[in-house]
Structure formats: C-alpha cells, structure tokens
Length: 568
Ligand SMILES: [Zn+2]
Image 1 (tube, rainbow, N blue to C red):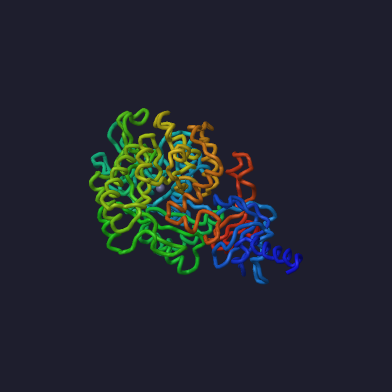
Image 2 (cartoon, rainbow, N blue to C red):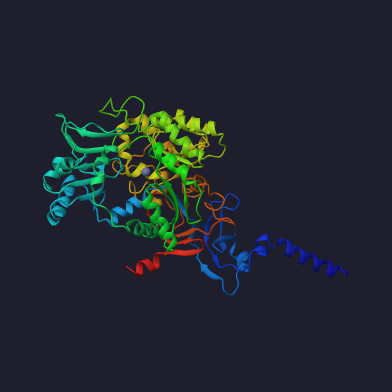
C-alpha cells in the first residue's frame, strides 16, 4: 500500500468511526425536528438541536447536521427556527374528570377570577334561580373564601336571601367543603339535632344551628340528592380533558380518586381514539371494602397500555387547609386552638386497607396535608413495606403540605415519593397563614426535598388550581403568594431546571415510567412540547406566561396554537 492509500484508508475509517452510533442506527425517521433549542432533561445530553422520531418513539437526539442522515423522502421535517422544546409535561395529581364535568354540567363558576365577592356569587345564584323551575338544584363550584372580598365562608343566610325556593349547593375550591342553603338542608334532613358523620363536620353557629357549611364527609349528606348526570358525560369529559391538557403542554396526567363510571369514560374515549393525553387512572380507596374489591379485580398498578393505565390507589388521610380540617399536632389553627383537624381513618383500618391493596400489587398514594396525618400514613406505609418486604414500592404522600424536618427524615428513610403542589403557594398560599409562621416555613419545601434526596413530583390538583403547569413551574421558582405578594419560605425556592424536573423526570418516576417518559432520549416516547420562549433564560416572573405553541404525543401533533387561533 502506498502512503497515500494508507492516508485515504485512515480518513475513511476515521470518518466511519467518527460518525456517531446515531447515524448508523438512525434511519427512516417519521419526523425530524431541526434547528431547535431542545432542553432534553437528560443529564447525558442536556441540550440538543435536533431529534428524530420513528413509530412514536425517539430514535436519536443530537445536532441538526448529524441527524440529517435519519431522514428519507417521506420523513416529515419540522424546522423550529431556534424555538425551545421540552419533554411533554406530567401532572401527577389532577381531578381532571371532576373539573371538566363541572364545565359540562354548566355549573356556576364561583371561582377566582370569575367571581370576587359573596355579593357577586349571590347575584349569580339569584339570576340562575329566577330562570329555573322551582325545586331545581342550583349548583356552583370553585369559590374560595380567601379570594372573596368578605374573606369568609358563604352561609345559608347569604343563599336563602337570593334562593328561597331552589336548593343550592356550592362546592369550595378545595373540594373539602360546600355551602348549601336552607332548602338543601331541609331536603337532606340536616338540623341542629344532626350528628357529625365520621370524618366530617356540620358547621354550626353560636346557637347550634347549621350554618350551611358542610365539611369533608358531611358533603355526602347532599351529593346523593343532586340530579343525575347524562349517561355519556364521562366519555365527553375524557375527550374534553385531552384538549385542555394538550393546550398547556401536558402529555401525561394522573387522574385521582376516580369512580367506576369515570374509568369507563376514559376507557371508552381511548377505544374511540379520542384520548390525546396519556392517563394514569387512580381508583378510590375509601374503605377496606374498596381495597378488597381492588384486590379481587386481579389487576394492579401499571395494567393498561401507553395511553391509559392504572396508577396508584388513592386514599384520604385528612382534610384540607381551606376547610381547616388538616390533621396537625398542637397548637391548633390560629383563632381555633382546639382545631387539630380531622383524621379520616382509625390507624388499624388504614393499615388494613393499605395492606390489602399493596399485597395485590397496587402502588399507594395517600392524601395527607397536616404533619399529624403524614405521620399516620408513614406509620401505615412502614408497616406494609416491612410486612410485604417491598423494595421499589414508590408509595406516595399526596400534598404533604406541612413537611417538617422530622417528617422529611421519615419520608427519606422509607423512600416515599412526594406528590407536591407548587401552584398552591401562589393560588392558595393565603390559607397557610392560618396555621402560623412555623408551619408556613415547612409548607411545600421543594428545596429541602432536593437536599434531603426526596423525590418530588408535581400536580395542579385541578380544580384546586388551574391545570396550566406553567403556573406551578413559576410558583416553585418564585414562591410568591397571590393575595399579599409575600414570598413564602424564600429558602425553599428552586431553580427553573429543578422545577422542570418536578414536571418531567420526577413525574415519570412517580408513575413507574422513567424508562419511557420524563426526558428526551433515544428509546423514550416522543412526547414533547414547543414553547414560545427560552424558559431557561427568561426572567423568573415570565415563567407563568409561557405559551405552548405545539404539543406532540408519540410524535403526532395533538395541539397547534396557530390553527387553534384560526379556528376561534
Ligand atoms: Zn386532590
């Protein structure tokens, strides 16, 4: 061989070997995304400019020049012109079905910012009552006393004044209480003699008369009396959820505490090809009988497919901050020193229900906001983990609102995952103050979780806060409360990158899906969003204004802001 041929051969082989493995395996892409600013959330390659997709999965992530080889004549090309791409966002805690059904039912929107005072709510209820046949229920949802000018609960008197003949039922934004009027109390036989149901409170005035406020399980005295939904409402709801999720960049949601009808709604929507968001369905675990039913079905967490599957079984341990029913250690709520909240379960029963469900293969997730409730749940989890010898259980505490250092230490030791709610800080942060500054310090402590090696995923808890995950990402970074503008526990602020992790990688982990979701990496599902600004570079206060331009699910475009704008 001549020297020149040696050189040529060396160049040839050098070229072959320098072509990254990408080009050799990356062929016949269905979609090639080019010239982007792709934030992958993958530590091995955090930023890229191009991504190739085939059969709904990511084939390669790299640079525009090197991925050109992935395309053939039929490959669709998407030139991003420098725009920012992120993995599809994951919300691990929604009540999406419940929320969109309130829209489909035409309930009065009594939430902020639609309504800002009790006076306005009275006007809306009065208006509806005037047009409705006598006896017809007037139903509304979303009110929040902290955001009403009067800063108090709505009472039966407020409602009787505008609706003396129609029963009224107004759900609080927290989902933990409702205001009803005199007609509704009469229909439900709630009088001064009525006893509080277990896990609930019939609020009374100084004379012992019901005020019209029903807390937690006391709302079950009313719900059976409400009009029945049309039979296809759950199917319509599943379809509507798809549209709402795609619009804000969510490609996976966990829908929590679902009824059998709601799960059928999702299943039918999936069969019809209407689902445009991946859903983990979390069935109710409200009794030991529920646990036994789940066990008898012979399916468990993870059953389903990439679009629709069973998630964790959901239980409530305590109430809500808005209803002042979270279970705390002394001292009590400010102004109500004896109020240490409500525990919904006897510890032995909780453990039995947890054990039966977990033994049948169900991941557990339990709502616990107060530190006393969290401790009770951790006691139960510890017993179940030990009894069943579980290694990778990923049991979850939902909210963990008041997460003191003592509580965090136990969470870490038990490898429990947190379903946190950054948007609560902004939207309902004013509720926290009723629990005193020490508890505000440990409310939703995202930075401590990271420092302590605790994995936190994030959820909107819609309808408690809006579905839009950008409110949550922003709130996790700035922690500013809506009402006062005060920054709550500034030491718990986290970076944008860390906030994005809550809604991507950590959300995937919470759902046992880290091998195919949560970052943009070869082999994972091609779920991604194109947004209107570089979220890593903009001022923190702009994060809540981020607009999603396009959402892709498995490589298919399921939302396009441009065509959305045209159709409106
Ligand atoms: Zn919830």
